[in-house]
Image (cartoon, rainbow, N blue to C red; front, side):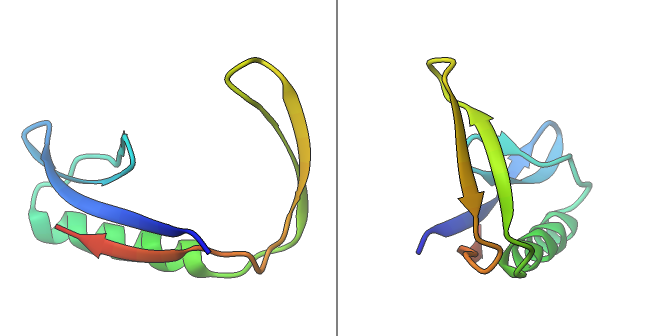
Length: 79
């Protein structure tokens, strides 16, 4: 199973959480950014409905898959 890390970082004159190369909105304090990251991480662990998904890869090819609603990653907040 995958593990997703939410990293608390200084960003744009404030604080944000970052997943991979993607930043959240800016928060005024480190505490606010951590609380937001913890909420997002908890939501990502919740099971959902099984759904068909379509996506386009970097080469421009389209793919269809079934996303199992119970297949949720582990999450952790760092920083």
